[in-house]
Each structure stands twice: as C-alpha cells, then as structure tokens.
Amino acid sequence: MISGALASGKGTQCELIVKKFGLVHISTGDLLRAEVSSGTDIGNKAKEFMNAGKLVPDEIVTAMVTSRLSREDAKENGWILDGYPRSFSQAQSLQSLKIIPDV
Image 1 (cartoon, rainbow, N blue to C red):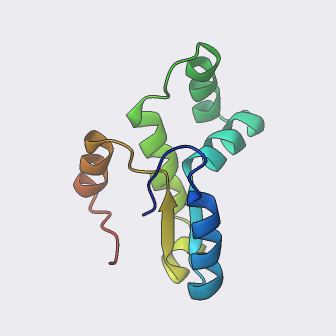
Image 2: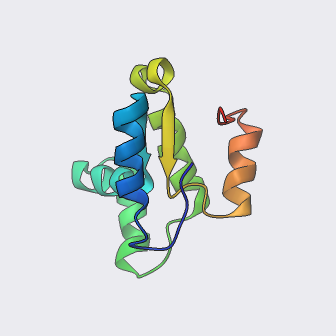
C-alpha cells in the first residue's frame, strides 16, 4: 500500500514497483474516474458526492476497491493499493473482509 499527500509521488513509486514486481496497480482515483465515466451505479453514486464537493463515502470506495481486487489479474499477480486505505475505518473494512496485504 502506498500512502501520501496529493502530488507526493505515489503514482510514480507505484509505476516503479509494478515494473519491478509485476503487481497490479490499483489507484482509488483511477477507479473513481473509471466508474464515473462508465456511468455505473456505483460511479453515479460517487459522482453525486464529487459534484457536491464532498468526499466519496468509505462504503462506496471500499466497494470499488474490493471489486477490483476480485479480478483475476489481481488474484494471480498480486496488487498494490495507491491511496487506499486513507482512514482507519477503511483499513478496518479491509480487515473485516479478510483482505490483508502481503508484506
């Protein structure tokens, strides 16, 4: 998992790690943009919060992340989370879903 402030280089570090180890890069920002642009139910829910200038609730972000983690490439190659979890409650959500990073 990579955490840091906006524009702190998380994406750059993830790219290097992905190239070296072949992991799947899962960025919450990329997931949000993809869901919104695809017009999915979850994307439309997220868009309402984003358009109102609010943070997207943990439940929505966690649902997007867990959905992405369930895809074959992430299961087969491993993954690196970029910008998630951002809060203690998000970390607890991962733990309750038995999603534990390999460190």
